[in-house]
Every structure is written in structure tokens, then in C-alpha cells.
Image (spheres, rainbow, N blue to C red):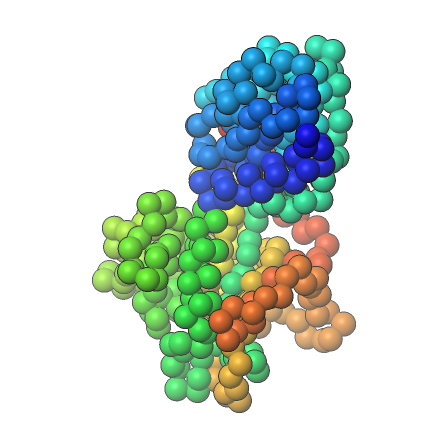
Length: 367
């Protein structure tokens, strides 16, 4: 027999399997327990347009779902898109109880819980809510704010340098850290870099297996922030390995500094279905994102090296005094090879731009 709490823990783990492949949909995991508390079906949402987690689990369970319990990380959808409403499927399957971690914040897809209750099904919400929200934080942040969730990734020495005084930077981090970055890239919809990084380092910005260099089947969108259009024609980001968007002021508009308007860029990415962005370089662009209040999470790879001079990992972010320092909350610190990888969430006030969508105008969760 499996408890509902144990089932939700498993559902959260299942949901994570969809990271990087479900946008603009959320990641969702589901377990179905039979009348005796045994697992009779499980599933996760694998890709946009594919069956939702509840439908996968119901297909496994068949008639064994009748009289059972559905444990799901996100409120079952209540609308018809490319697939039918999951709430209706659960009613038809004859489940007697549905346990939900997180309510759906999108107005069109929400209402599944009410539909279930109206059919006489017992509904409980909030079970392992914090864990489920953490696993789905990119999508939840995006639909609530109308712009993608942004993770800034950097690699630096112990004294905060991303390159030596002569400009060399390969390799600051260990091979294990570089492999870990490719795992991180595989979970996002877009990788953003500045034209300075493209000109200096000519990165490919793809997801690769570092053992043999093979490319992953699914590649994030490559976004180069290039105000004046100076990305070289032979730059590797222009190859056929992944889709690329070279963003100029003509394409996204200019901010007060004459450079690409970063908020407008994120809103445009959201409109393209991007919900999860990895900001990789360079320090000037990272400073711009931080100054605009557009960074949600930081993943840093800190190498046990000292340079004493050279390019800093972060440039001007508009912070002039210690009282204005941006504070973070560590969520993980792990040794990767010889490096330390830390993950931290920014502690910043809600910084909604008036151009971003209000919650009552959010697009529906697609089916």
C-alpha cells in the first residue's frame, strides 16, 4: 500500500522527466492508486501536444482506476485543446478521490477541481505543494508574470573572475562542471548570450554529450542579444545545429541605454512559447538583466583558482551601495569534480513591467 504523500513524492519526480520538452505546457506527474492503495498507473507529460500525465496513468490503470485515487502535481485541466479535459477523463474513469499539489493559475485550464467536486469526487489540494511548485517553478513563474523564468549561469574563479587579464577563459571550470552545464541546458527552452561572448568565444550554445560530442535530439532556441547586428556570419550560433534568433534593437526595441530592451525581449520569447531561459553570457548582459530585475535564479560554478585580475563574472548592475545589494537564498551547494556548484534564488520584490500580462489575461495551458 502506498500513502498519498508517498505517491505525491513519486509524482513530483515523474514530472521532472518532462523538463525541457513540454513548453509552453507545464511539467506534470501523476499516480493512480487502486481501491486498496496499490499503484495501478503512473505517467508524466512528456511533450506539448502529447497526452497529459493523467491520461497516461489512466491508460495504464484501465478499469483498476475505478474507485481509486488520483494523485497529481497540478490541478487537472478543464478545457479542450489538442487533447480533451483531464478532469472529465477522471470523472469517466470513476475515481473517488483526487489529490492535487498545486492549483492551475491559468483561468481557462483551471476549474478542474470544481468539475471533479461537482461530479461527487472528493478533492484535496496542497499536498506537497512546495515541492511541486519548485519542480514546476519555470512554468508557474512564466504564466504568472507573462515572461520566462530566467536562470543566470556563470563559471568563475574563487575571486569572481570569468577570464584572465589576457582574455583567456578556457577552461576555468572542471570537465565535470562543463558536462553538468549540458544537463542544465537540456532542461530549458532557450539559451541567451550577448554578442560580446559570441565574438570573443564563438560558443555553439547547444546541448551535447561531452563524451563523444553528439548533439541532443531536442535543442533549445539560441538567442544572441546583438543590439547593432554584429554577429559574424560564420559564428557557430548560426549553424544548423539548433534554431537561432539574433535579437537587434530593430527586432525587440531599444531601452533607455540604446541597447536591446531586455523586458521586451523576454515578452517576445514568452509569445514564442518559451517559458524557461538560461542566461549564459556575458558579464555585461548579466548585469543588465540583474539591473532590470529579470533574473530569478543563479547557478554558479566556482573553481578553486585565483586570478587577482581579469574580467569579472558580473559587470555593472546599477548597484551603488551595500544596502542595495541583491540578496539570494541558497537552495543547493554541491561539489562537481573539483568545483563547487551553487544554486540560489533571488530575493527580489515583484517587478512587473506594465507591458507584461496581468494574471487575468494569461494564455490557457495548451493541451
